Image (cartoon, rainbow, N blue to C red; front, top):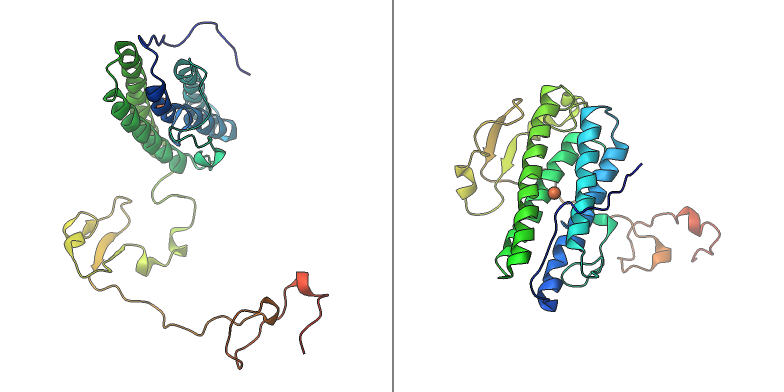
Length: 253
Ligand SMILES: [Fe+2]
């Protein structure tokens, strides 16, 4: 359940109304990395979390805080839309149930959200707005850090590992291709990075740089054409049987 207090987590007091800036600020509310996304992402992750105790509590605490931040930013009759007026979408949220994959998405979202907040910080001189953004940027700083700590702790607790998902049998992968960097351009600058040689972060492999990536299979014939779809095809091409939804349709002779 939720419990409501009358107070605000932090009071925002803009000195001047500024309709154009308010439009820009919509990104922090209804944008892909805005407060609505973060609150919904964490609440869905938390409600679906199968690990009782500290992890579930962490996720739901942060999700509840994001609702409080939503309240701070939504003072002046905002829309649930981004700075271009596009309506917020549930498609923005990530909640797979795999905590490592989800926490990694949370770090990314907090970083993108902080990036947008700092850009918006530089777009206003209003001391009240800057005061509020200093607070939300500070909270995002904590949120970036706490998800990074939670990722470390998941591995320390043996709940996940690399590569995700740790429970998928490692040998079921095509291991010949699991650690190859494929260069598929005429430039080979990509060979100069840590991702091209040496041990991999999952501790299970060594990077191999394939300087000249080539197709693994020959180009085959195109798939057979269903005559009822009237695609252009050579007269002698194979025909595929009609799908079940076409079982009662008349067949061309
Ligand atoms: Fe946050």
